[in-house]
Image 1 (cartoon, rainbow, N blue to C red):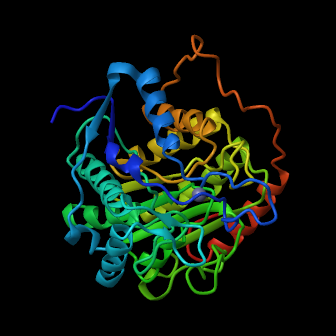
Image 2 (cartoon, rainbow, N blue to C red; image 1 turned 30 degrees about the vertical axis):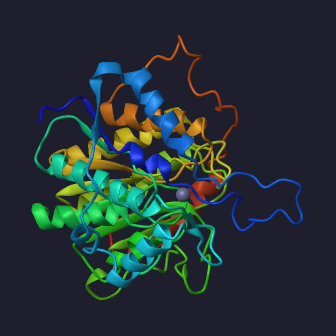
Image 3 (cartoon, rainbow, N blue to C red; image 1 turned 90 degrees about the vertical axis):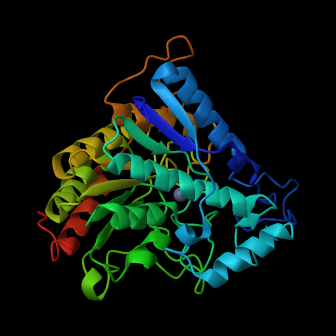
Length: 376
Ligand SMILES: [Zn+2]
């Protein structure tokens, strides 16, 4: 298939997935007056899509993907969990027990479309098709473990992409997860393996639940057995912004990926490190995301013959997410789009950044991970 400069893999059906109202665990506003909408709104994706259409015009192509077959989902997820999710969704869904994650009658199908988007984007990248390959996934994936949903995620799109890549052509896959939350599901899936490297940059939020989310995202969680060293967690302090992320790329992400020498890079590209995100505490702006993705692209060129894929994860301020994601796509395309006719730059870029704390935390991470990687 002819490719464009920017190839966006998605399916409109994913917009039908909705979780019951209420932020976090505040599903009933007993101590509040008003229940707010669940953070994972379809408007997140509508705004990204509109931004792409306006900013990139004919140089962007949207490919509507088919629903992922069950055998593909089973490369990562337990059959019992898939059965449970399918019937819970078919029965109309609702909140999943004590979690922040919710389901409606369209969620099972939406998650299969999102998985398919991630895998199709990856296959196109591995076929050497020209252009940037971006999976506009909803629901997101990186909190989903083999046996359970978590953190608004049901099927682990990045893990499914990595498995598909391993199946097709790639001996080694490196996942760089810059979503502001720890990629605990991805970590769990590959924790004892050395054929998939995970580097997760995240706020230091720790475990969410002793049973369904026990992973902490700490420095000490480095993998086990063959996988020892292949999980590289980099907790970041609140307030980390553009300069802090660039510092972490330079000091940790780039040297580790170079040493690992992957055949494919996968970005778990969540833009909830954005400056106004309601579910995090970091301060990255559109130019900061541009730098992150541009360095990621350069790293793929240097280590993996330019083969990489971008997979959408979180990002919950429905306006800024679109600007932040524009930054990511600009970085991947090595360009800057003028928005002069639409208001300029990043309308949320108004906070300064203090990088001292981020540098201190990075020093600590470098010291820890130097046991497994050539870091200094
Ligand atoms: Zn997130």
